[in-house]
Image 1 (tube, helix red, strand yellow):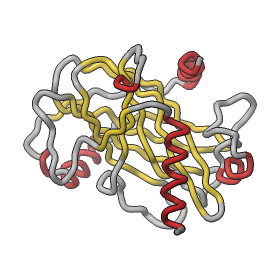
Image 2: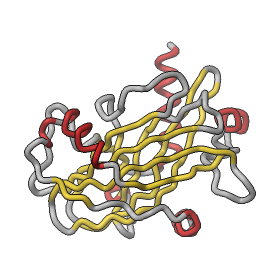
Image 3: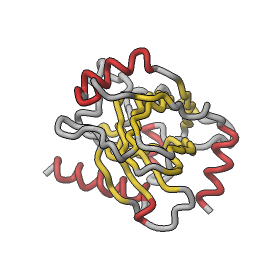
Length: 229
């Protein structure tokens, strides 16, 4: 019964945060490999709640959409599976992921990553705003970098780490009272071995590096506000 309730809450939170979008799995798995006519993006990510450390967010989806998206077919929610999640390093440790996205060549935007923290009886949702532009005119496998998203206490009018509602849950987990500090970095020196160990199909594939842009909080906030209008 508790398991069914948890699954329902997870589905409800995901639906409320993501709206209409096509749900997609990770590009790579034990049985899938990069396709020659597609763009496969590799990205590592860590979500670390240092504001309320006992409520570490677990990644639900990564939003990607075509430039000027108008309908569901133009929006994608990539859902990490158990394979994408790296082993936890202990109690209250941040959650880390090896993520992969399959797209047709073209131009896209990565608006946000959505996550959830839970510890009975509280469950809360987080939204890491990225607003990254992605441009990949030709097929191939590309490493786009490491996203480090750290929740700290919010000040003044900084973007909240998650919605305000429901009031108690969002406050307890640190979503409404916290904000995200996001850092984009090149961690390929370590990530290469992690990806190739997790996904042996990458061993003989040429991987190009095309990193996400440095995170500019002011620019990101402005674009995010415009997107929501």
